[in-house]
Amino acid sequence: MTKAILIILTFIPVLLFAQKTKMINDKENSEVYFVLKSDKVTRQGEYKRIGYKNSILIKGNYKNGVKDSIWEYYNYDGKVIQIYDFTKNELTYYYLSGEEKSKKYKFINGADNPEISLNRPPLYLGGTDNLNFVLSREITYPKSATENGIMGTVNIIFTIDKNGKTSNYHINKPLGFGLDEESIRVVKLLADNWLPGLLNGQAVDIEYVQPVYYKLIDN
Image 1 (cartoon, rainbow, N blue to C red):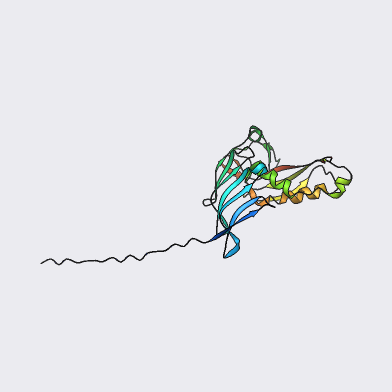
Image 2: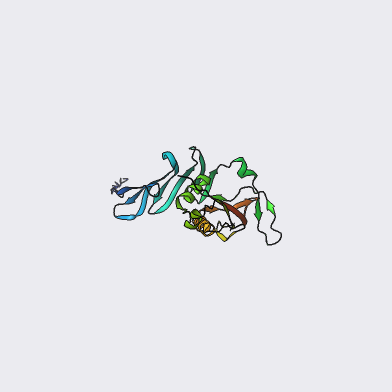
């Protein structure tokens, strides 16, 4: 006689508890995000940076205080200009203007350092409008420059290496009156957000020029 064996499977329910969060509307830094109620420093969940006229410049997600999954970066016209996958650490989409496509960069090769066209220029993660947003928010017009009516452009020259790291900040034509020092200070705030330039599919060291504009407006 064949014996029937009865197997009883006992299912133990697994309860997943969502971590409770609190929304932070940081108007000073134009950010809206969530933090854990149990730890008000750790960001958790949706993040947005709001630009001028309530436009969205950045939209993404945090997981336990770390940028997670897909982040989208916009220009002031509402166009997506970059998409970055933080799970894979990979840029999955980017848009370049005609001027950006045709721009040449000094290729640092330890010899003649020629100016060349790249397959992909070095990119500020967030795009040009986000870069300008950070500069305009952080910059302080030096008192000595305002008192003397000094205006103009300071071109900050620096290296972006094949790992996206920056170094060797300098200026070719100083304006003085504290403008040069202030320009380097604010441009260094961008240091951790660069993606390297690509030549024939390989990351390369290049020299980058970031202008900082100063203009006094009559009241």
